Image (cartoon, rainbow, N blue to C red; front, side):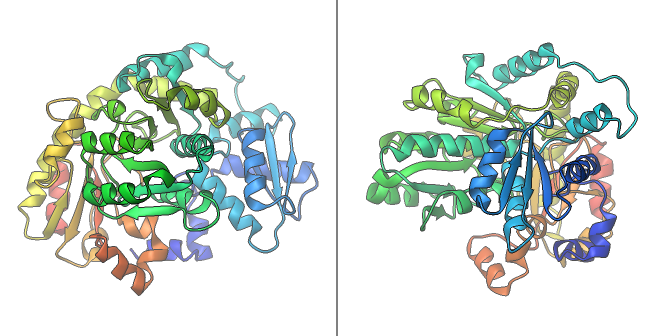
Length: 471
């Protein structure tokens, strides 16, 4: 825990030791090496340089940070952005890249370095249309998409969210609908997209409890004609809460509001949310790419949605496709993801039942919790498909459990390896480090010191023993 606080406080000696981590938060060394080369080649040593996946993405960053602070360069490197070091411009650019997931991937950076003779490497692979078709077809089947052309692969899960957000915003602006509803506590970068890209003024409304659709209904009755979209996670991260899918769909239809649903927490392998939403967005970095070595996302449109024709025309303007080698890596993992999911689901149930009876645990949040099970069953695909996430409130101080625990520490989930993390510290440190923020979290029903567990495929006895030693 001490190391996590030091990292969040950006202590140089701690940050310097972290060489590889989640790429949207910690830049991969090949990406940094390629950007350093561009900085020298373009004689931009006095400016921060970032390489983005497309000129379209670079222009979006320029609009967000400000034209006075950002210069664009376009050549064989796709899109290069140089940002003035003064003021907040560089920090704004870095946050834009984190929230939207549009920086080039490490595999693309590796190929660019090889192509320019900067690192040794084998002959570069040609893009494979077969891999892209295989992945898109398989995932279209997984989500129940009737038409392949209604499904897009994206460079990251957050790009799926950002692309869908922009498309919905454009569509609803013509109706003077500019309000957005955040249903429950969402993943940090989804939350930040709503905070930073909804425009001037207070344009985001938070419904703290995603299961309290009476509050949502009351708000829509009063101001529904102003609302552009609702963003919901099925289930939520980190409390694994599931809204009533039928009623949420009815409310969004009644008030002509676009409903965007993200099923990443349990994954498209375990839940079927397409019938309930207008737009489905999800990260494929979890469950599908279960080795934890590639970023990718998916965006899909429901052809039964009343917004389908208009969104179908707008969405392609904002989608950033993934690099071909990342698609190939996902294709390699696809044949195994269903078997991995089955093992994870079985392990999750056994671990949850163990934790629910342990005196060292105050409360267990998971898909089949008593207050959640009935709503989750509506969207569940199989007879037993809870997904990997379990979040717990501890009886002991957080560090006394987290520090000695022999489970691997990490912020992601949906991997073959079991992981634990003090989620609120890693995702919302600005809130948990502030006494007033901690009180606000408690008002939302969130313990700042909760531990989130991503259950893997190891023998369940080993997983339980590791927790038994520290609880």
